[in-house]
Length: 490
Image 1 (cartoon, rainbow, N blue to C red):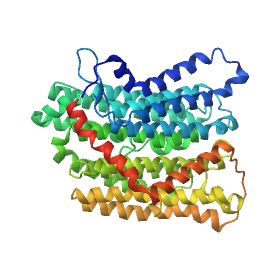
Image 2 (image 1 turned 90 degrees about the vertical axis):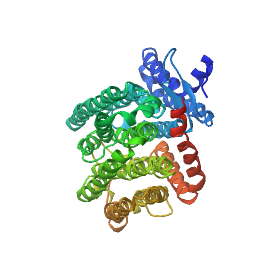
Image 3 (image 1 turned 180 degrees about the vertical axis):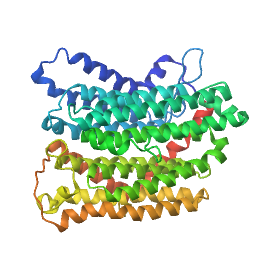
Image 4 (image 1 turned 60 degrees about the vertical axis):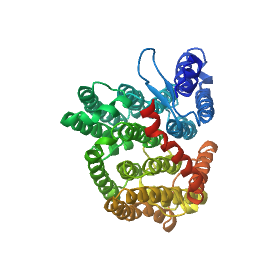
């Protein structure tokens, strides 16, 4: 089904237009709003994101709606897959604004351009899951990444912030060039960059098609911080402002996987015998590197950076299982939803303890938190248990669905690797809990109302996903059913 009426075409891409247009309006408004009233920037940003979220929820069920340029192939497809992911991206943006308000004021970084860049990055993420053409995937990837390069260095003139921005930019540009090379080879082997046409022609592409697929895997692996393409992650996570680290740890990762699922599952399933072992191998290495190296990290931001690398490995298990398991894609979607709340909640607690930029982020700073702020410590302990995969948490439900999909896809060995590395991860996650409750300590804890609300909401969502995962997994399954049919039929 294709919407031919222009107004309907605009309707299905309205959430992206709202987010992008809102960022542009904020740029113009900055010239007219007095300096003393620019504290309205976060609330205006929140309003735009909420409006886009309402519109996105209203699109649930619009499976197969396409936005097609005159005389061309469909560039954008709006189905439950894209809608589910857009809800994740918009919730990520809303929660990031909540944890940013007081943090930016406290650290002297409260500038309106922060929120404008955040909106532009969210719009790029949304396009990643909606893209029906490799060219649009690349443009969305850059729209996602370029604001993040700037935000990583937002704490200038701090040297570590500038260093993180430079590393992220250089390695991001390098990975983008590899990705573009993969797009070029795909075009050379199939004569098109449209995903439905690539699906039709890729089986006859021969060795050139396999090389193109390898390049695309490398490009995506850089973006989602999968080993051995993870080198930028620890330094960038540590040097960037903590709110930016929280945002990119979820948004950039989910955006990369959104496009990866769309491209590999919808356009390249016929080459599954070639790319599934490669993705499974990358997932294995990512799980081992992320979970083992995290053990020796004394800085909680670096520890969560390696944790983020490890969780990319768990999602890649679902990607590898997606060709031969009916629940591979849905397991990946559910895992990303659970990871959104768990990881942003953990970073919200980190922000509460970071009383000054770069101070309060060592593991020793968490000593005695159970006595100083018992509710905050309890929430952090729950987030750590969720990241480990202990029931009843959203993290446990996510890993259960991922490992089940791997077993269904005859990847039992990969599920075993995931279980073993989950046990290893318990050491460094539970170490935080041990420090909070088994030691005495001192230190400032700054938990304003917006931050407390964020911690509470994310903890509640993580609990709901742990106790009642069924309805949410059914939603993910409804979204996953469209991944192939709607693109192929677009």
